[in-house]
Image (cartoon, rainbow, N blue to C red):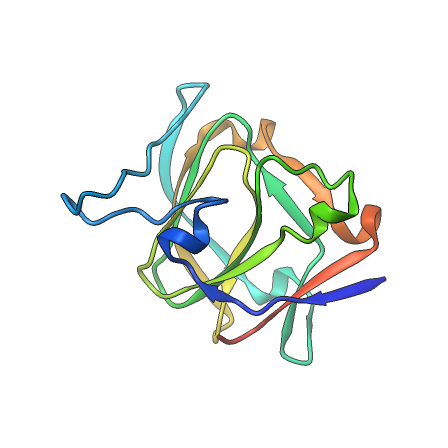
Length: 166
């Protein structure tokens, strides 16, 4: 098993562009983060993640898989504290070793927001600096029927680790 440590970088318009968008301020002249719901099933809710859902080793969170949704975009905003999200571009399928090099980690401060392109691979957001995080979530109601999984550890022999606190 190969372990790759990712440092979480800030999600800016430029750094996050391959994966989605950082929603702009109203009337700031930057493009909007458009919502797409191919099944006309857009919904907003709160979700949560805890550290109990994953393995934490010596202060590093272990990312062993990524999910994706091909029928809708997804917008995520940590509400109760800071979080970390791991992503890969929608156009990779992990069939080539170079695809594994496209995986990135982003630190999301409380109340910051990212908008994932349709099909963007993602993990989390998981809490950073606490045991749990509550997240405002905008996605398709049918996500359970549209949930692709890249089993990174099982199928590709790689685990990504991100710092538990950024």
